[in-house]
Image (cartoon, rainbow, N blue to C red; front, top):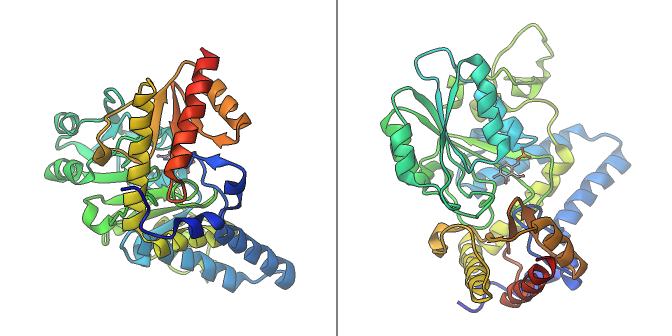
Length: 383
Ligand SMILES: Cc1ncc(COP(=O)(O)O)c(C=O)c1O
């Protein structure tokens, strides 16, 4: 594939920073677009002109919930609005019972610390966390099979591993978890927006994501899809007035639960972030996730092959079907390399021993080639 199947030039015109920079850091933060800028401006104008317009603002939060739901092929009632993946995961974990016979959490070593730490924090309440090893940037399905047992309450498996871009086979892990009666928690933050993802048919019981990476948004908002019928089994200790059946009942003495996933909502929602989040996700859906998935896979593969051709070492499997667009290249001082690239207006993302190039639907093959040439030169300079 040499071209995106959508109008790439039109997409690029809507991202002002592309006039001067090559952003390849979607594994960390997406660039601003006209769509997200206009959405933030709409909130600021409403605040400025109306002073307070609570009903419209809450309406925007609901619209963002519905947009996320549509994004993952689900219903709005099955989506909770959170402020971060850490908080969404903590709300879920705090609603589980860690005192019965099922106390085990089987989590991949590829979980982002946000998620791993939340499971570890449950050990105080009786949970025991077992880790699925990361092997050369990959996580093997067989390793789940040897750890998941009848005592397992939940399996925690990210879709994309933040460090290498390795994509886990969620359906295969779901089979292992469900065969033993365990639930499957999926953090899809490193892939959502770069590929089509249908939560209800994925096998996952929970799908969480923040908004600022491939979803083209900003920090401060996250979403959590919960399999229909499952939320009512949770009694989250991390809660707030928006988790109630009627947040406006204003009865501090009575703890009831909102319907569906709304019981996992907490405090005043992230309103401005909801404006922005909806705009980013709506734009991606308008362009089309199948087409975006095909192009980001092409870009990711160009990164991997181009890095290898230039003598670099890529972390994780090279098969495009097993990778997010993120390509992780091993280097001695990743932060120094990131800073060197920055000076050339190329935005990459250092993480521990790797520098990550994470192209998205607006990038070109030429962007990838230029970034790799600059990276090769930067690596020579810093060794
Ligand atoms: C896979 C993944 N999950 C979670 C996070 C962070 O989640 P939050 O800051 O929303 O808690 C990140 C990165 O920031 C990530 O890459």
